[in-house]
Image 1: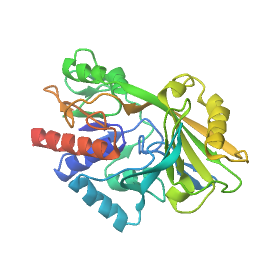
Image 2: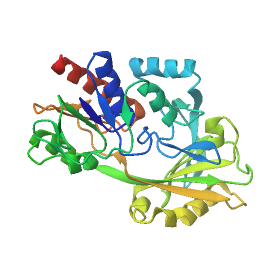
Image 3: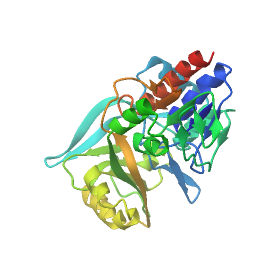
Image 4: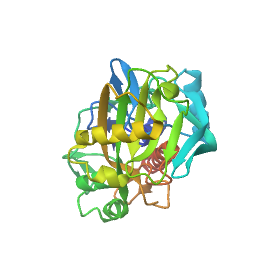
Length: 311
């Protein structure tokens, strides 16, 4: 059994299979696992460059979050964000948002535990008969955005191909801005409405709990779409937009821009996962609301469905 993709959906799927006694391997094209729960280190300090936070309303996911909390991996961050729009800014209450002091990627790594993950392993084809790059498998799970899965699937796999081709995704850029000092008022995180560049800005020092003078900004899809070929070129515009928004007098000492071509699903598949008669499974946050919790539940449910079929 092969799972392609080591984000939280793929890892959750593999964990369920392992619990059921099904031998499984995860293959990940990147250098590390985590997917869009991505963290990158800057001078030894992690900053989240993918998902900004997560919430927990599903009882089973909340139980997992409690395990992470007991292990010292997560902390309650905030239930209140600011909202910036043309009329000014105001507080927006909401659910408790959780953050990870070591970065959200650390949670996926912890969940993976002893499940075998092979990184730097690019899968090129999934053919009829559950053949992955020429190797026969009992079943295959693709845990990645639909457009990426579509590149792997043989057109003869009509059910899976149809599902991934129906998915729609929007892009985003995430910019990590490191400043000399903290010169902004406490705001934790801010939704930015009706803005040509910004969609969300998070105080990463507050989110991480170390008070570092670091902000992470996420852009609107329209702005990101114009800079996907050269995302680093968008750095000055993002920095200026953040400084204007928060009234910051100092320039950032460093700006790192990360491209997410498939940042957020904009269509709902109407189920928590897909598993067809060919033994091809699909999982991810496209099967539900675009949330960390949705991705975990999708992988968990697919893993259980596969385990039942392979029993």
